[in-house]
Image (cartoon, rainbow, N blue to C red; front, top):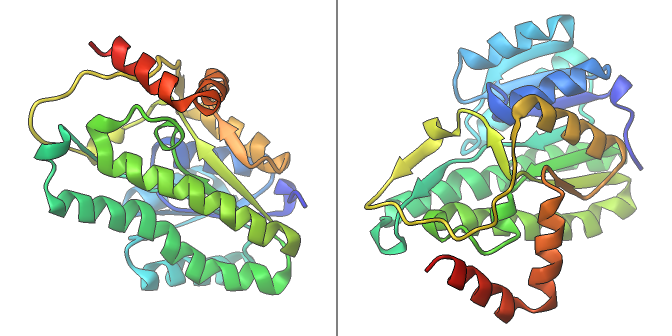
Length: 261
């Protein structure tokens, strides 16, 4: 079921910087042609130009179905097909739970979660018709483990993306379409541009995972797609945390609570 990146056409949202840009380069190095999209209309063509003839860029706001349709049409017009869709957009609202306003919740859900929903509506019919392809949804270790109470809207959407991706894999894999869920831990990106802060910061209570550079994560993503892996982690230590969490969730929460005191 794994796709051949040497002959693939990829569409990546949020690819103007960070993980999305790194994944675009990793896919291109393996032979893929890449449609680079970003809400920043200057960054997308800049990254596309870095890929030479293998790249084309366009502005895309994932809250707009019309923008995603335009990205799909750009891929079809320029490269003739779509094989890989990577949903990689995310914003954060950070602060104590009681200090984050409803507007911040609505914005985070609209971008992080409904961006994936919109993408599915636009690209899934195409992939289903051709009976092949691959979807990568970027979640987070904060979508696997319960440490993100200081960024609860982000955490809630990332948990939702993990669940959506698991169920999507059950639906799509029998139809020839692979699904991967990228759950990065610490990655050195410009994510601070996408964070809105509210109230006083809360001390973290999560595990200390290593911080990787975005280029390394891009290669991890490309390897995961090539291997048709569902769960793509950037920190192997997260798998140990997952096992402990699954074995006894009450004990796990108690341990994190003690660490935070």
